Length: 251
Image (cartoon, rainbow, N blue to C red; front, top):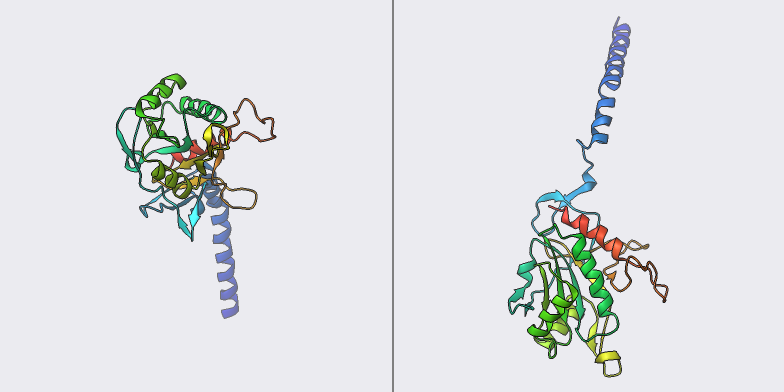
């Protein structure tokens, strides 16, 4: 008798599992497909607030295992206003280093930035930080004329000037974007044509390269229309716009 009861118990359990599978599993699958159930890896803790929230699939630039945050700065913009890193808190923004008398890469960089500005004109939480590496010439008045000439209209796009050594430290140490004086270079200065992408919490972000490391920067010289320039460099503006859109969706 005990053997038959055991067999009946197994049969009963198997029947219950079968019914569960037929009725409930398809519904669970539908909920996953419909987005009601989200996998854990698509959510993570915000590194600055430790609050649960959506985080885009963009990497953090880490130094000794610690996500790198924008260094403090305080400079004067084209309107004579003092602008600090706090003014960009809660905003996704791009960083560039340039100078107004640059006749080579700066005009191309800033035309691309204006195109990006226009693509995100509806977003009040998007901005751009442009730091001049020739502050002795690029006064507030010079920067204001540059703004008008290039059609810069985003209220969160500040062209900043100030102490030269402070700006160079900000470029080379703070953002790891090379900038410096060179009497042998065109116009007397050297700098990269790269843009840094900063999230709403002030962290440097980028997508990963083919080796799984952060790209760190985005090439800012080649336009979307060009696709590839004469030196064989491919444009990254379209990639950058995609990643800006991702960060704007972060909580």
